[in-house]
Image (cartoon, rainbow, N blue to C red; front, side):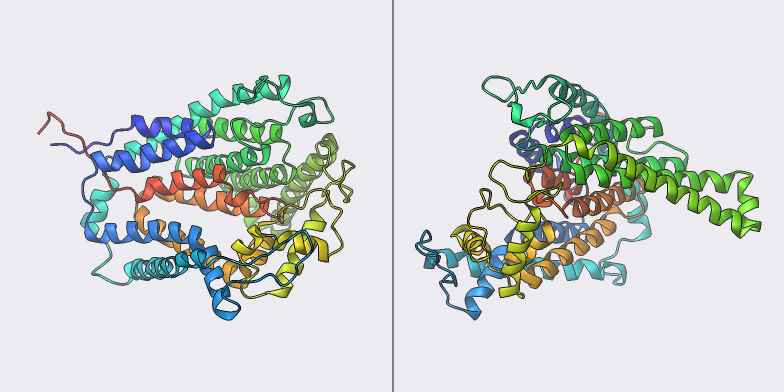
Amino acid sequence: MNRISPPVVFFILPFFLMAGVALQSAGLYLCLFLLPLFFARPPDRRTKRIILSTAALLAACYFLPVVTQSLLALFSDPLRSCAIRPPEIKSCEMTPQAWLKSPVSAAFAGLAFSWALLALRAKNNASISMSTAEQTSFTQDPEELRLGAFGKGLFWSSILFFGYFLWQHLSGFNLLAANKMLADEHRLSNGRFRIFGFYGHPLSLAGASLVWVSVALWALNSCLRAGKQLMGLSPSRWLSVAVLQSSVLYMTGGRTALIVCALLWCFFTAAALWRLLKKSWLNNLTRRNPLAAGAIAIFVLAAAAAVLAAVLYFYAPTLNPRGVGGGTLGQGPLGDRPLFWQVYLAMWRDSPLLGQGSFALQHGVRNAYYVSEGLAGLRDKFNAHNIFLEILGVSGLAGLFGYLTIIVLLAMNLKILAGPSETKRTLLGGLIVAVAANLLHGLTQNTFFDSAVTACYLALIGLFIIPPSKLPSAAK
């Protein structure tokens, strides 16, 4: 019986991921749960330990606000009463039932980090690490077909959805709207529309597209370095995915996301040029002449700066910032964001270690801080629009440290699971770049934890952690 991987489901997974939040969830459930349930062969104990460790870390990430809220209850009133009580807020007290989740979440987080520590020992512990023979069979496992199918699906889905997104950008057609049209308030200054795709907000689509731009550029760089195709796609096709997703990102109107995208293009273009120079006659010139090498480096940096300047000069004025009129107070390209940041800094200042707690925010603490900061008249009392300030205001330094720790541990776990597989190492590199890109995007947005974006992360992580699969075959 030959072990093969059913690639069709992984080919359609990228189509699910670009078709909106509801279908994202259905696609993840189908490809990362139902498929392994029916077709999985049991992994060995060492692989299973790392898989469980990674899955537990993912779940702990979602429970982290509950854990920090539980710690708040230990150091203050267990019902966590609000310090500020403006007239419109009756009470910020938590019900005792809410704290029933706390011991469970705390124990779950402890289990997650225990698994993580076991997985981290894999590099130096012979009882956990894979043998050379196991690593060889791992690279020859037919699950490489799954990664190739995913890459091909990403290519064709990018083409398909780009067509729809371009149509929406030019005409305002919205399949999900009752009247099939976007409202005029979503027009840019150039008359075109900010695209929503099948998501709830253009910036959700921008964050998701930023993931695929990162993966495509990293894979393109790896293809050029290795001189062969990866994940079923040639360098020209990876370039096509990067261009299409960058174009989608442009049409969303996300300025910060576009700047991050431009930085990625500058970085990978510089890397490609450097690799080309090392293989050409200029290599001998730069090796012998440090001044020539410095001049080339300055030229590349100047070109990158010129691209960024062009993006800011020609594109930013086409947007209509929220901070201009409409009941808002802020002015300029950042709109009211500095006011949101002021509120969250005040929230963090009053509780630097553990933050205000997610439950307290749901019961009016944030609005109370808007009042205390003299911003009661602000129409939109939004969240921080900065992922770092959001975490600090809600979970404090403990939460920020927890999230960053989880990201690092996940990367280590996935590196172990990747083993010597060049394809999986490329996928891991793309995932790391995508997380870093959306952290930069998070300087002015909160889309890092947006469900549309996290679904993209989970799909990529799922390609590592689900057990290898098999189907019956007539061949013996």
